[in-house]
Image 1: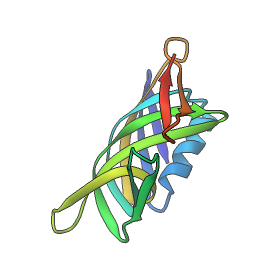
Image 2 (image 1 turned 90 degrees about the vertical axis):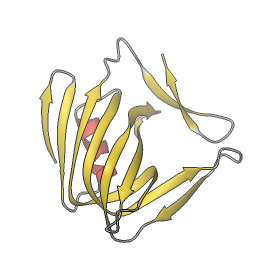
Image 3 (image 1 turned 90 degrees about the horizontal axis):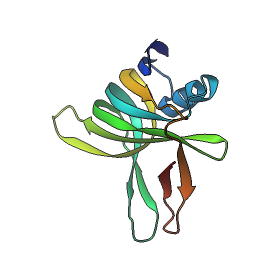
Length: 143
């Protein structure tokens, strides 16, 4: 992972073979990122695991897509629940035949690279936490 900071914005490049979530969580913990918006990202994921939140019964339905897929859009946020960072990302992915699909990104390895921009949130102005709701969702609470 390569990171360059300008004020509250970070340019991040993930390298081939890195696990997207493990690498991102390591950085969040190491640099004490209290909250952030994932502004966007592009690149390529391998074997991404996507989910769809059913809403009614509070569960996600997950599917692992085998192979490499171009990341056309990546956005989300970073907050905390207890002592653990929660990365909430949605991705739109493209196939070689130019069809697209997307959902809640739950896991993925970087196939070639992922290039993304993150803007951190000042915790003295906005505090972002995840709390478990009755429907099973770990909802975002803003203080």
